[in-house]
Length: 476
Image (cartoon, rainbow, N blue to C red; front, side, top):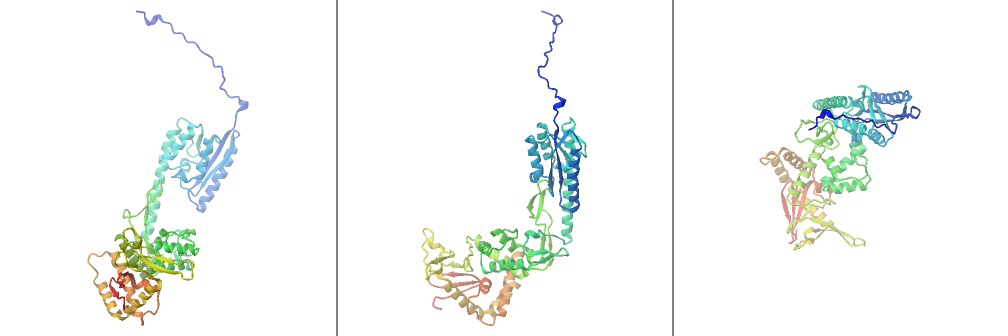
């Protein structure tokens, strides 16, 4: 066996054939961009914002080997999420497209307070040979120590952002506890900000709010009200021309219209994403009574809640509410249980008529024989019903007062409040009534009539809002 010491190693150098050294005469200037951002639109921040732009424009031009590409900016935008920062995203896109070699910015916190966003962006740029210079921390990202320093500084910036968010949240809750609050007035119909910072009624917009409540209590559905407002070319709270059901519902359920204020309806789940969640008891809420002048009197507001409850109960029982007019959803078939819907007969002739028919007639395997009603038939039923109500008004008032004094067991506070509001409203109307209605009245219809059940033998049962009923016979 041969000894390894008997082998003599030989190393041969293969010289380079291509020179990598750059010709000094051909040295290119570094294309440099500045990035400036302020997170609020306050006046003092505006001056800081302009100062950053002027400073980096001058700073870059002072370097003979640098060429100014531009100053990218974001104004009034948070640093915790880069997705909404158009200036930032445009700069990164241009850099990755080969238009920028170096980015200059004030500090790590100006660049991004989110550690993940900061590091991922730095690494993407670094892989493409693009450097970032953080002036305050004196960090150059292509330096060997750059990424370690970036990690540390970004984490500190993220914790600073968390601390700021918690301080802001604490400040809001302290104000709520003191009964102070503010609104997004530009997206809230009916109120303006007064000179003292409190809510002041905008009378032009208040007319719309009152009309929404009036139509709802007359029996119109959310969709019907939305279509009507859209048809009348009334702007939504957000300034749009098309209304939807949810916007109408929000107005009908917002306690601010009766002069109260429930604060902290939502809360921020994550300070980084700014994601909000409806408060279902996770954090404290604050309810302020009589905080400002109401547009809707409290009794009308509670009547609207009672109507919402009534419609919800009907839906829960398998019914369907469709209020295209004051009669829709209020005429029920006593034989098959379906509600009447409106139809137009002879729509393009002088014999045009609106009729109401049981919707069960058009369902498969249904043998409903209940007859149809004309609008004038329903109006006539109302006049007859109001005559009976007028004659029995003393007994009805007594019955209502007894119900208010002796509510059912286990009734919820909300249910009791809305029912009491409905009973008080009927009682007051009856006390003021000096004669029965001689013609159809929308307001009285909405106040007294819950629904009318029509039977195939011709009888009609009138159900009142006080949960009682009486029969109007065919020959009556």
